[in-house]
Image (cartoon, rainbow, N blue to C red; front, top):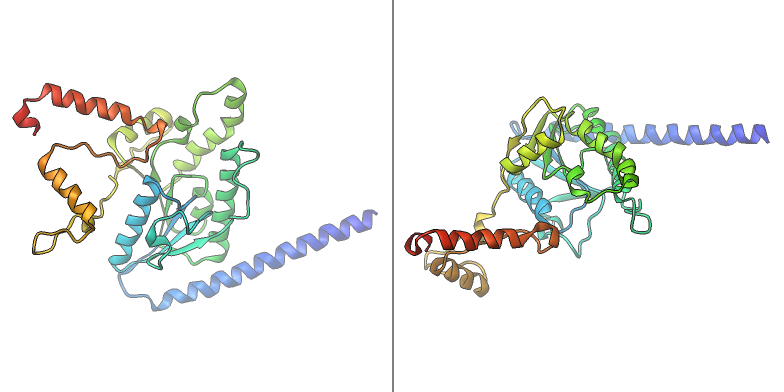
Length: 290
């Protein structure tokens, strides 16, 4: 039985070594693909845990399309991409999307989301490290766990922080606090390893410093972009968009409007923004408000 056990472990080690060797060969072949790239263009990878529909996804998709339009080579990596629930640019061929690790579970009986998100992020980053080309820049979004692994690629790593996950995990019992302890430490440790850190607002920058007390650097603010083509008008003054869009423009021209780009979800606290808008109307002269 002992010899059988040794034989089994030897077979596993040989299989693992062969797998790693194949991955490195694939990586070397991909490295050769870079030779014919245009001078001045960069290779850029985006790493995002789930390319669904949300504000974070809209931001990285717009950023990726913008860089691609500037002549850079862009690839998006993710652990999950449902073509029935995603932005059009990620399914119509505009962007090159690579999916690795979707076979891994996202939770266990509706629990342990952060544990499985971490495992999926580790797997995704290992695949990028072992099988993909070396990128000039890798932009890691939302989940920072891939950062230390991707540093081994030799690429410059940019981390975009929408909001520290530590602050989003909700109320905690002592048991949940104990469970979250290693993940909260990992979030801070891996985030601060990045070559550059970006946040989506000055408010998030303030929360960043409050949350990550060991941070010696201040993150730079990069506001989410807006696809201005959606608001362009033709020479005749009519919208290039649908009739619904034209009705929206008419409303914007006639009224002072508050616009929220959030998805409607309780934790987004849209009520606070609506109340603030009401106070603005109350406190400003009518002519100035309009």
